[in-house]
Image (cartoon, rainbow, N blue to C red; front, side):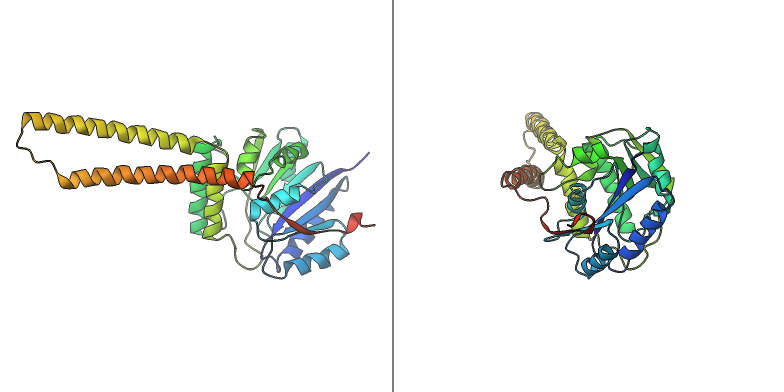
Length: 315
């Protein structure tokens, strides 16, 4: 009987001191089930530390470890997409490079997929081991996802997930810049199951997901998979026009009833500033959409691979 293969995709950034632990733990967990083969695809997202050297040393000893070295930093979601492009397994598991993912619960994560109950599973953490700022950002992102891409309220995407191969094959058909994995998953399947478990503390170091990266990811999700922001802008424009019309009628009636009423300069300026601000927001929103269309038409790369190290398949 042919062994089923599991592909692990790990985006790496600033994990020189933790990646060896993560890969070793995967090996220990996989040793529990001899009926499964596996591969590990580590994607170096132009990490500023020495993680690429560490990965090369690990790959030289472990033929199952493949390395993708990106030419520059493209962000976590693009790094995952690069890893997805090279997987060969029947199932694909994504996890972080800092040791926070409870890899020892791998089989619990995969069981709903093995049982045919899910196409995609992910960890459901009771408490997220991250800063209050990141928790706030995650909450805002969850609200946005519910509004823009119809994410079910009970779903909360996390860093430890598993999926069937067809999900990955469908996701990588998206070859434009600005990938947003939550949107790509939700437009592929709704058969998603969460598995309760506890997130761990980082093995070493600090997180590298800065405010700039969080904002960039939020904008990707806001713009990439929905035209609802444009519809909201249209609705706001109609609302402003309606308010302006009603206010104009009120002023005319006041003038008729009491001709000595002096029209207010302050209220006029407030209305002008409000409507002008709304117009500028709408123009900026439209400009953002047009800019992304322009970048996509220019074939801006989702990622650029400098080097692939695959000891297992080297001749």
